Image 1: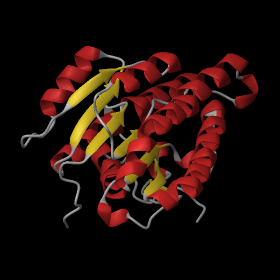
Image 2: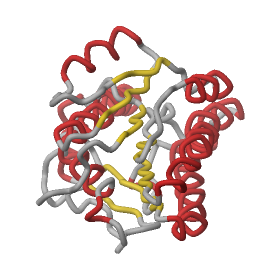
Image 3: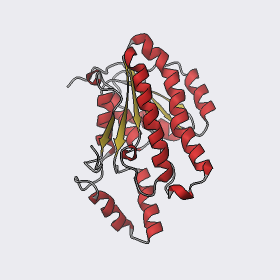
Image 4: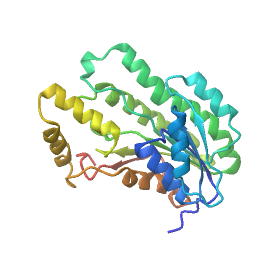
Length: 258
């Protein structure tokens, strides 16, 4: 299936590892000019070399999502206009919501919602001009079913999902779609951190915690980053032109709600 993405420009956040990196590679495979965004320049340079390239113009921006003012300046300074924005940021630390400090909510709100909003405001004027825009937010299945032990993440992810739906309603008339991809347990560094933390807090072995998480999905396994990225790439394409304002779980069937 031709996704009609050749020569589109995409801004992909959190793209030095995991789902973000897989999404960047998947878009590049479709002929997209990819701009990577992350805070580690050495890792950005490494991923840049891995991107498929058929006379495409790939680049990167070094930015830290804990500093929204810096992010805003870096994006404004970029010479590129973007048809596609992939919002993707590592999740907050785990723990019960009752025990969370106010600073944890503030940090997560800044990194996930404020920075998403800055990026959307930066890219939408061009999207309106050309009548084409795809904004995909990589969030979590917790927006449908809160996950135990991820109190701050559950709270902030829900806020991002509602922000996204509101944005979809406002921007749809301009040929811009806004959708959320909700990964389940995916084989990334983030999942390793969650498993190790749960093992340490419960006294269970890493192997037991791993099997419990795997068995929560009918597929009885973890997703690979590329499997989540495939959904991202499709939603970024011309083929997804009438899909707007939805949450797409990519979780092997783990989420119990419809």
